[in-house]
Amino acid sequence: MKGKGMRVMGLITKNVLERKGYSFIFFTDPPVEPSYSSLKFKDILPEFSSIELGDKPLYKHQLEAYESLMKGLNVLLKAGTGSGKTEAWMLYALNRIREDKRFRTIALYPTLALANDQIRRIEKYVGLVGGKSIQIDGVKKEEYVKKHGLSWLREASGSSNIVISNPAFLMHDLKKYLLRKTQGILASLYSKLDLIIIDELDFYDPRSLAFLMSVLQILSDISDVKPQVAVLTATLSNPEDMGDFLKKATGRDYRVVEGEAFRITNHYYIVLGKNMREVYNSVRRLWGEAVKARPELANYTEFVEDYSLFEKEAYRIVSILEGLGYDVPSISVNPAEIVSEFFKDDYVTLVFTRSISSAEELVRSIKQYVGEDAPLASHHHLISKAKREEVEEKARRGLVKVVVSPRTLSQGIDIGTIRRIVHLGLPDDVKEFYQREGRKGRRRELGYAETVIIPYTRWDRELLNNGLETLRKWLGLGIEKTLVNEENLYIYLFTGIVKLKSPWYRKELNELEKNALSKAGVLRRTGLTRNYWTGSSRG
Image 1: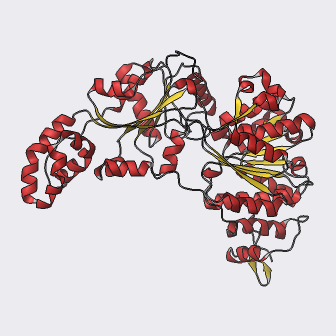
Image 2: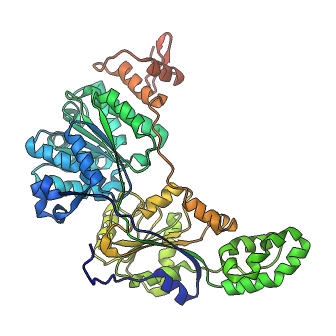
Image 3: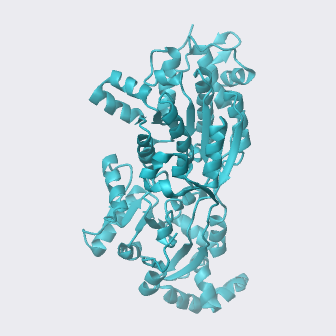
């Protein structure tokens, strides 16, 4: 909570836009306060007393998820970005590791690059109870082997309490293990797996999700003890179906836990343009002639006669006149002029663009505008991981005030001190918009957060051409729901191939697997037609 009389320092975008002469639309989302439990983190795990988190109370959904895992259940935790989903399962894993150093967990993220913050927290927490963790994917594997050797990597993975990986690496490694039990980097882990974590479930498309579910089925089958599974999601619309699938796979009942993320007040600004009066006066001069030529335009006359109404419908009105061949001044916006003002804030501004080239172009424009020493950095996959991590750390320390990114910062990274998201052009779908938005406003001491939308592309203007209300409706659509289909044949394609190809994982094909294999051309009445993993024919 903010202390009594505590003053929230920071720059307000409204003042910037007014001072620079921009017209804009403004509205506000109220704060969200989640339900808290009466227990603090250190009450459950005394080792948390040594870190700041220890004195904080658990959200009720964190406590419910923890207690459900302690009862041996699978858990589907559905809560928004910044709701502490990682801490919910970590409390359980840490308790188990403290009791038994043989407790093993594998935590799967879509990519490790998108999970830097979670990995950093996991490594910090597991050290509190004397446990070990390791992160491994294709890139990390090569680094480890080059530095320490393959034997070291197998031993380190097998002795770690928490292995952090991604489905792509796991599936590749699991294939080797299924063909030969002594193969696979994680061979010693598979038979003693206690807990599987699936984070960022919303990231996966239906096909990827189906393959992930097939991996869960196989991991459950080959582990000596049926593992527990915790699925973390913000948008899964049918968690019960996923729970039923996991129950069949693991034999464990499940609980669906829902919660909300803490949110401070958020102010929205839709930047319209700097020369709106000039555009308005031009429209007024041309409108009478346009209505004579096209009488149906009289329906829009109220937006031309009242400037306050015109501002909200400017893109639509200008588009109409341009379509009729009239010469109307372009609506002017200079993103560099606006964004450079955010260097004066106490907190960080994150700018999302539609591409790497537009991100770099904006960085160049801002540096030309204010100088090369601006506290500014770009962040995208063409920049080395080490450099990206350096940018993130400088932002946390306040040495970088503005970070420009096309997408690499839209998921999984928590800088914590981000107050403002600037959308230089809207993304194609609402889901990515809210993933971007989830990066900010996570700390109470920020006081308020801001969303600044600067129309930049044809897509943005198409939305605004249909009127402000269309944009508001688009923003209000909410995130596209993730849907689990336990009868998706892709699930059974992989499990079916495994049953056919593994010399030791032999089970009778079920009807869904036969159907999937037949449709893929792998199985005919005469038997297996080809080696699906290598693509070679089989006589």
